[in-house]
Length: 509
Ligand SMILES: *[C@@H]1O[C@H](CO)[C@@H](O)[C@H](O)[C@H]1NC(C)=O
Ligand SMILES: *[C@@H]1O[C@H](CO)[C@@H](O)[C@H](O)[C@H]1NC(C)=O
Ligand SMILES: *[C@@H]1O[C@H](CO)[C@@H](O)[C@H](O)[C@H]1NC(C)=O
Ligand SMILES: *[C@@H]1O[C@H](CO)[C@@H](O)[C@H](O)[C@H]1NC(C)=O
Ligand SMILES: *[C@@H]1O[C@H](CO)[C@@H](O)[C@H](O)[C@H]1NC(C)=O
Ligand SMILES: *[C@@H]1O[C@H](CO)[C@@H](O)[C@H](O)[C@H]1NC(C)=O
Ligand SMILES: *[C@@H]1O[C@H](CO)[C@@H](O)[C@H](O)[C@H]1NC(C)=O
Ligand SMILES: *[C@@H]1O[C@H](CO)[C@@H](O)[C@H](O)[C@H]1NC(C)=O
Image 1 (cartoon, rainbow, N blue to C red):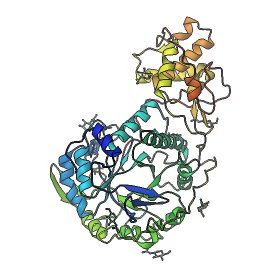
Image 2 (cartoon, rainbow, N blue to C red; image 1 turned 90 degrees about the vertical axis):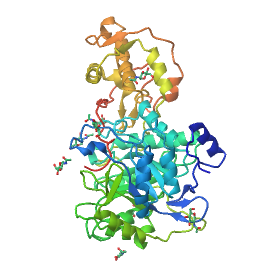
Image 3 (cartoon, rainbow, N blue to C red; image 1 turned 60 degrees about the horizontal axis):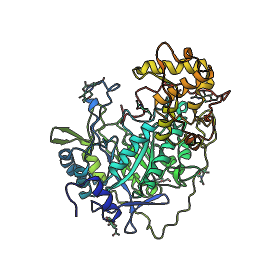
């Protein structure tokens, strides 16, 4: 039934009609386990992280945010799938895809090989920044464009709304924005009438926050919560053991988790070659009761030394780690439960309370980005930034205007610890800056001199009012009312709207 070329419109129709492009049986979630849709068999992930990082071909990793979409190169997929099959791979994890490219060939080749795909929604430049988190119209647009591009393939297993964003006690506030991203990605899939593909999060393994973060993403209203939990875990190195590696403790911790949990990256390389003794345990009886398998980091050998194969042009050379892993995978045959006879009993965790290790309120979450609200507001403002400003100038201007008047910036404030989010905190930087400048200008009785800022701001002819939309989109704090009256006492988030995003990079250094 599979055809080589499938355009978007046809994909949408075929899904609605109930026959998707590929032959694989979709994976569904019941309780804390994955199952094949059409029979009773539990699905365990035997995954490989599959994305080259070309920026690592030299050692200048820190500034290069280019990426190569691993699902858009049919020749590379044909080249690599036989090796993935030798590893009994049934899932590849990809970190950044380009929604403007065509993914039919790779997705169908993977489907033919029985391989499902789990994809991150961000990319290296469009991701939630752990040190200056926001959830904006631009990010939502990036996320939904990836969902649009991939939802139609029946071998899509799930999406990650973030990867290791909060990774230490001092940046846990960022998790509020990632959870908002989970909520809005799920809502988008639902409102688009797409197949019910899960949205999860991939965490690092920081002892200071590991319990809180797992609880946070799982707690509360389940329409906002993750559908599955990925754990990037590197604590089993060399010939460790279930107990020594911490895998036993992690298994106990997750034994009552209410959604599927799996290792979204594993394979410590401190001892080489990697013989993957942990693989036997992950799929053995101790862990397969709780975990749905794992994803080995990673396919390509790069300067970080995590590769299973060396790729040069169209030629692939397997490395010792490949041989060890392949041999382990042949005996990875966990016994699952039957879908029909499985009655989930685990319930969601309680939300973590705020303390020195956890800085994100579970509710309210940051508001849902709405571009119409932002556009309408922008057009209604009298004092706006000049369009020629550089990123640095804009950043400085935020500092200046919010320094002059804290209340001028209440409409764009966003603080996950207080749970206060201005109604325009989800707009792009230009609109946010305009909201602050215009509020300040009006606070100064619309004196022309209050809309100058060293020639960086200007007066525009304000368009119509957008009454209604503001109230509708206003964050639960209600801090940005249409009148923009001052909201004394609010502490503003420091703006670093233009930082290159550390959280967006993928893979290990
Ligand atoms: C259930 O379906 C999957 C996918 O088609 C297949 O691999 C598996 O063997 C099936 N299970 C049984 C018990 O037939
Ligand atoms: C980033 O890496 C890509 C791939 O190696 C390379 O083509 C590009 O020139 C690099 N860009 C910068 C700014 O170094
Ligand atoms: C990158 O740096 C590491 C250590 O600093 C070095 O071992 C490696 O050879 C370098 N790789 C390249 C491609 O220059
Ligand atoms: C957390 O601490 C690191 C280094 O200790 C620092 O670079 C980073 O900016 C801090 N993040 C936040 C959000 O304070
Ligand atoms: C399974 O767990 C028990 C302790 O709960 C441990 O003694 C045993 O070694 C574990 N099995 C494996 C294969 O790690
Ligand atoms: C899961 O177990 C942990 C540790 O025993 C406990 O703190 C937590 O409340 C339990 N969660 C649920 C939802 O039962
Ligand atoms: C920001 O949003 C406004 C309002 O929708 C839009 O007019 C403007 O082009 C956007 N700016 C950028 C840089 O995306
Ligand atoms: C959020 O508000 C709290 C309490 O006022 C403050 O301590 C914290 O610095 C604020 N966070 C940010 C990112 O501004």
